Amino acid sequence: MKLQLIVTLLPIVLPLAHGAPARRDTPNPGLRGNGSLLGYSPDNEVGGDSRPDIKYTLVPGQKENPDTGSYLDFEKADNPQPIRGPTGSDDPGPSMSAFNPMCISIHADRTEIIAGNYYYDRINSDKLAPPGTDHGETINAQWPMGKSTRFRGQICNNTNVMPDATLMAGVDMRLAPAGYRELHWHVASEWSLVLNGSCRIQAVNENGETFIDDVTAGDVWFFPPGVPHSIQALDDGVEFLLVFDDGDFSEDNTFLATEVFLHTPREVLSKNFGVDVSAFDKIPDDELYIFKGTPAPEDIEKQNVTTAAGLIPRAKSYSYHFSEQPAHEVAGGSVKIVDPLTFPIASNFSAAVVTVHPGGMREIHWHPTSDEWTFFISGEGRATLFTAPNAATTFDYRGGDVGYFPKSNSHYIENTGDEALVFVEVLQAPEFTDMALGQWIASTPKQIVSDTLNLSDDMLNNLKTEKQYVVAGSSD
Ligand SMILES: *[C@@H]1O[C@H](CO)[C@@H](O)[C@H](O)[C@H]1NC(C)=O
Ligand SMILES: *[C@@H]1O[C@H](CO)[C@@H](O)[C@H](O)[C@H]1NC(C)=O
Ligand SMILES: *[C@@H]1O[C@H](CO)[C@@H](O)[C@H](O)[C@H]1NC(C)=O
Ligand SMILES: *[C@@H]1O[C@H](CO)[C@@H](O)[C@H](O)[C@H]1NC(C)=O
Ligand SMILES: *[C@@H]1O[C@H](CO)[C@@H](O)[C@H](O)[C@H]1NC(C)=O
Ligand SMILES: CC(=O)N[C@H]1CO[C@H](CO)[C@@H](O)[C@@H]1O
Image (tube, rainbow, N blue to C red; front, side, top):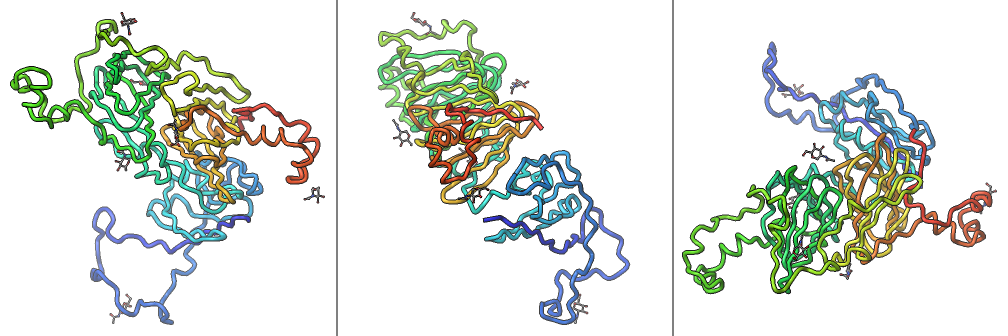
């Protein structure tokens, strides 16, 4: 079904008192009007023909058939318009957003009120002028981390902000040089990708085996539920992405070393450690959570605690030096995968870091075994989430945004900017897998495809049966 977008303008009412008080020659009207303003009166006046002349230039692709759905680059457009080919109608643009007006858009099957926000329109062109192929309602699959509450030096995101992202939640955390994320453990599993800088991580497992390592941008770590660990930033500080296997995860839901000491009777602590009660006189009187500590010694051996239990065996290492894994080059970019096949301790975390060159696109695919939690590291892109039976929504993303694509819901991620688009796809699965639309169609008997989709033999004879991951495209 074709989507029709008709935009109707509501009369713009200027707020009276705006900025400096105006000089008044007439008596100041009361706060409210009177009963004569109620509707259905022949005396009521309607705004009339005060509609301003609208000046705008359509951007490349905007006159195309809406089903072509090319990316519309509104970033430098004077006055972005909600128009695709013959659908939609003009909108005065900047002058409207200055007064934060509302417009009503009537879709084929629903009516909604949209608050105007000029900047938002520019960076979400697929919301202002959706491709003609978008239809119905999917889940919301986009959340900018920058809109999440920044607390205790971090930005978080979970089902509070993406209600359908039930399988995973993420946190973007930065620690200043020598800054610690306090010794703690949690009920969820923690998977992390270092985004910038470097840090020292350490942990002790149930057997008393120890682990310590330095990780840098591009590396990955994993801490199983209940395994206590700490993170300390090295010289340049560190920024990392944490992904938890629980969409309701809250950073508040961590067991901190300070709190367990603070909330145990001192007599019990004294008995537990075989020391005098006074030994605990100077423990902090509140949690530390994130705090600046003594810089970590450069030589990691100085912090290598060796016990009778020994080290955590390499096969169960909590870190994977993913930064040193060369990316697998493909036509439109590159891909590298880290999953339990090579990083066994992270038993249910499978991830791919994908780089898409300008004009390229992560091919249309879906993940049969898991929802996908995506973090956009840099660049600009868009994706259409297709949900059975016929809902499709196109979302625009840029570095710092989170995406979410439910299990078996198809999607692509197209680079819409001038720079490389880099993102990480995280699954809850023992192996990173996807079903590629191209490979499926190319590997199906031609007669079946042709009976179904009426595609030309010429096209069918030239399809590639290999998975493409990222396809190339022209950058304009
Ligand atoms: C009621 O309000 C209208 C519009 O402001 C005004 O023209 C009219 O004089 C008012 N009537 C009374 C009875 O105040
Ligand atoms: C890493 O952080 C430094 C500041 O510590 C900043 O200058 C740099 O741009 C960051 N790099 C990336 C890739 O975010
Ligand atoms: C720690 O000490 C053990 C035993 O001497 C050694 O095998 C290991 O390489 C050291 N370093 C780290 C980082 O674990
Ligand atoms: C992996 O995660 C999925 C989704 O939560 C779950 O159904 C499955 O049981 C998990 N598998 C393991 C081995 O934990
Ligand atoms: C397939 O396409 C051809 C050429 O446009 C058209 O004549 C034919 O009716 C189509 N067949 C079906 C089943 O849609
Ligand atoms: C984990 C966590 O604290 N999540 C936050 C996500 O964002 C919402 C709204 O900004 C906060 O209320 C949550 O606390």
